[in-house]
Image (cartoon, rainbow, N blue to C red):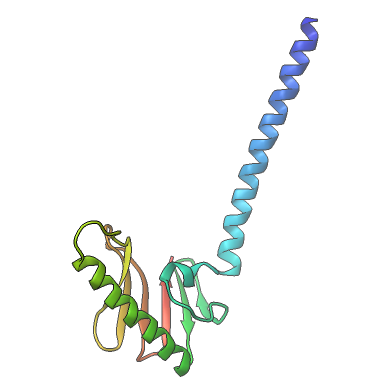
Length: 136
């Protein structure tokens, strides 16, 4: 009877270690796939809609999108509405949900998307160059 419990413990341990190994392998592969095939989650994160498949340049730190004139104008309208929404949320009285990241107008041709607490720059939208640069 003792050998049965020993075998049962060994088999159970091997199964648990196998599951953990499989989870780590899937996590590593998914992170690699995310970096290799490009981020489809960027439009949702930036709260704008654009053609995220039209990547013109990508490296480990940035993804650069070259946009058409029409697409640039559509994004500009979306960002402008988000900037007015941000000021409305910030000026409202309690209770309100403070956004974790906001679009900021730098000048007439440049807009930045920053995290509020860490002030980390996530994206730059330039109407002059017709491009959107996302920082990973």
